[in-house]
Image 1 (tube, rainbow, N blue to C red):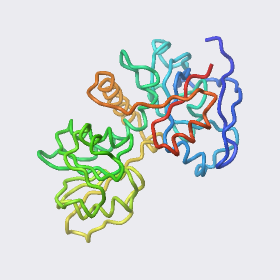
Image 2: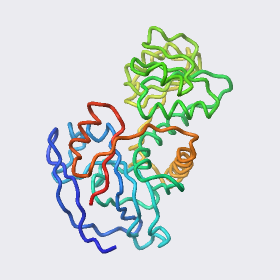
Image 3: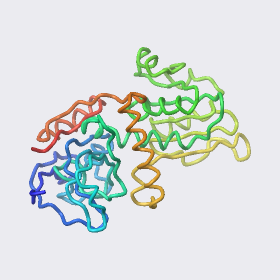
Image 4: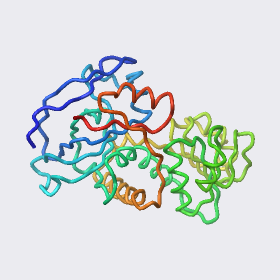
Length: 316
């Protein structure tokens, strides 16, 4: 590697455009990789945090959690075989992120790309794909059971497919999903609102918000499960010792603070297997719109307004 500096997008204050500048490449800790980004994924969490800055980012912080590229340098305790490896990653919101030419990532927190997968396809996947896997993994398998999924964005379109692979029958609650899209996803019943949803579901996976999820809980059978992807249900809906519903929350980013080595090893192993399924056509992911690296602010606006998967191209 000959580069000494990298082009980066920097945050300055909440609800303000990011600015493009150049920054020296950092020294690596012993367990880190330096990745040259070939594509960076934009997720709702990115523009939401840029707008409100709930983590109190200092001026100069580089946002972005998802990226894909090539390993160009390794820390002293990272095997040299990682050099040149094509990888995808989901980074911490509190670390310098993927909206840059280069990003530093812990070596145990990357997924190797399967043969035939492009950097653009890979960069679009870490956050939605790993979140979907976490959501489905919360639900114990039970034969011939029905699950209802609410909020059919990038995450839950993958969730539907993973639930079907696990043997569940899947219905959906969505005001915007077309009947054609529902048919293509193999959804059995498409409900336009909660009043239409019948009772008798084994589990709910809700990506709308905690209130919406709580309003669906009465549709569950006894000993059912509700999984919240956006927020959490703070108080049980039912009285104690009645239907004994199990409440689950999903927070992929929390693993950066609370996950141990075993948790990361499992997540990355499952992630690599899921990437292979996408590459092999067993899982269908939404196509993404790619913006030039210099057009990040436009890309963020597109993601926020159009609700379509959006990518940032390579820094030249």
